[in-house]
Image 1 (cartoon, rainbow, N blue to C red):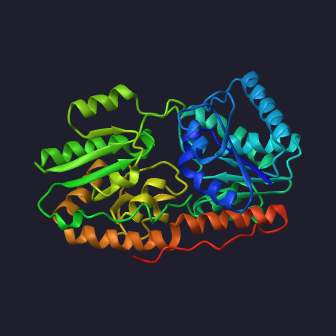
Image 2: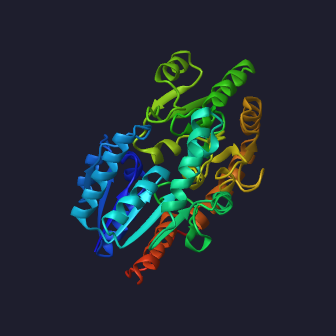
Image 3: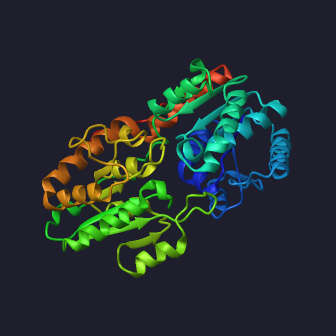
Length: 391
C-alpha cells in the first residue's frame, strides 16, 4: 500500500509529518512526500522516504502556471498510483483533490490547519480571492471518497457556515502533535537569579504578532527589566505578509531581541528558556510552537483567538492570554512572569499536563490513521502506540 503526502513546503512535511510517515511504514505503508523544492526535502532520504518535487509557487495567480502545476501533479499521481493522497493547506487541498480525481486516486484526506491569509486578512487581494477560493473548496474538499481534517472548533464552525465541506465528512484532530518524550521540561527552574528568557518561534509573518513582540521588547527595556527576548524563525517570501529580512536583522543589531533564524533542534532551545510567547492574530489551526512550549513545561503567553485558545484554554490556569495587537498587554504579561517565578512554574506544569493529555503526537497520529481507515474502508492495523505518562 502506498500513500502520498502533498504540501506547499518541504519544511512543513519534514517538521510536521515525518513522524506520521514513519508510523505508517511500521504498518507496511510506503509514504511518498510531494512538495516544491527546498532545503529540507533531501533529509527524507536519511529516513528511507522518497521525496518528489513540483514547481509550485504558493503566491502565484498566473492561470497558465497554475494549470501547468495541476497537470504535473496529475501526471505524478498517475505515475505513482497511491492508494491515498493526504493534502495539507488550502491550496494543496484544492489542487490535490482535483488532481486525485483526474488520476483516479481511490481515497483523499484534506488537512486544513487554520483558515489562513485569504480568509483572515482585510487586504484587497485577500478579499478578492476569498469568494474564488471558497467556491473551489466547495467543489473539491468534500467530494468523492474523502475526509477533511480541521484542528479547532472555530474552523469547523466556519466550514459549516460557509458550506465548504459536509459536516459528515469533517473530522477534528487538534494539532499535528508533539513528541512529548523529546520535548520535555529542562532544568532551568533551579536557577532563580538569572534573567527571564522568552522565545517567540514562528514563521516571521506580521500576523504572528512579530511587531507587537518587538514593541513589547522596547517597553520592557524602558522599564529597565533584564528580560532576554529571543526570536526563532525565518521570513517566508512566499507569503505576502512576511516580515522583511533586513528589518529582522536591524532589530537584532539594535539588540531589541536576539534573532536565532531557523533552529534545527527546537527541543534543546526550549529547555533553555522560560516562556513561549505567541501574540498571534493569525487564524491558526493549533500552533506548533505553543504545543512544543507546553510539552516543555514553559509558561505560555498568547491571545485568545482561534487555535491559540485550544492550547491556553483558561487565563491564569494553563497560560496567560493577552489582547491581540497590543504590545502593552504582552509586555505586562511578561513583566508579571518576571516578577512571579512560582506563577511561571505553575502555568508550565499545567501546560505540560495538557500537552500529554491532548497533543502527544502518538495520539494525534493514531487519530489520523483512523481517518485513513475510514476512507480506505478498513482499518490500518499494527501495534497500539504507547502514550506518555503525565510527568
